[in-house]
Length: 508
Ligand code: NDP
Image (cartoon, rainbow, N blue to C red; front, top):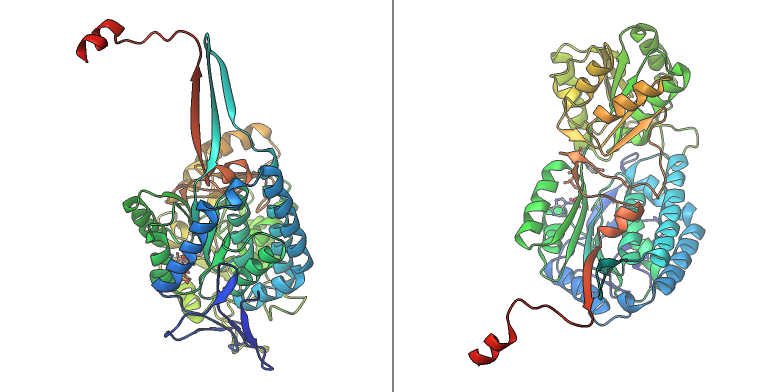
């Protein structure tokens, strides 16, 4: 049953929550209005779910877990339903991409790529549902065998941010379902449409009511009520490090499993012997993809001091060719930022970098010309000579701002890469295998790309070190985030017990 309550001639979508397979409106609270950040137009309204709605959603997920059938289905059956889910989502890719493009402000052309990723994640998770298995030990002692199974943890709370609404959801949801969990999703109140539509598609694919629930609302109220709910067993969160600490504390109080995928400050390290043409393209892509609102943005470019001048000139020249504009224009490379307050925050970083003595090489300001006046558009920006102690070098900007610095030798490159609290991803470009391996060993991050950037596959685990988080998403490890192991031990024949039988009989 669709969560869309109304979609009027003005094309404003109005949604209810999705609870137990049906729309559930939030009574008594003002709906949340989402304005397209590129045009300022009202495009969607979501319910502001209070504690009663959160409670109903968790209870629906609880029933679907405790009474089944979802966790009781065979892996093969869950895999079959997940494959059907992937097929149904595949059929709606263009529509879902348009929703994310409009609500995030990202180019439609690139949002299509997000949706391809969503389908790939669901398909891969389906393969895990079918092939996952435990372990056995038959050699530990005579007449003794043991085996370990992986059982679903229960009800999972999935907290999804606004930068990749459908894609980040797909890094959590199908893995939770493959493990046998039931879920309550809390999308960002800025970008809730695709999660609500995807919950409908799960139902249409035959995934039973109550297995996938979505509550909409604000993070500090609806999100907090969800993660603190005693019916939730595991929390999977993507967002800022500051909020991640609060989520971890709340999960700690409830002794819940928690996975945190937080911010990043990735370095893109380019040695003089690299394929410089490819490295320059990748430097521009990694910095400005998704307007830089990306946890794996290559927001720091570290260049071998021997080639710095020419290489920076090439990167700046290529950045100058990027088209910033309306998300639905096929020519657009860089869209609008998520909202005005975020644009102000990015501009504050720009002002701070200038004060700290960095050299502005391109951009540095809001864009208002050429029909962009009503949106939160920011020019792709590059600073050279960025000091390793400065805010711009160490903090996550989450906008189209690239910080450039130079290094002298592999040890210096490693030192500079690690000079931030974050540790999500980094990249190194070189034609020397020894250099590539040495630098990747020294980089303190969950992912290292060699001669590529923002690359991957659903098979490859993703997550951070240091302030970038705890746990891993996607791949086989992503499945394990939602399961708990059980050890079963079996002994036959004589058991040598340490209490002599006579002594215990006398004691009776
Ligand atoms: P937040 O960390 O506040 O929000 C991320 C998600 O968590 C959203 O869905 C939000 O809901 C929800 N949330 C917020 N507070 C709570 C809470 N107390 N309990 C449960 N859920 C909560 O990030 P912001 O949107 O404020 O962005 C700020 C910065 O965070 C960005 O500039 C960027 O640096 C970083 N960020 C990193 C992301 C990543 O991919 N790692 C993604 C997004 C942001 P709602 O939006 O409805 O409030």
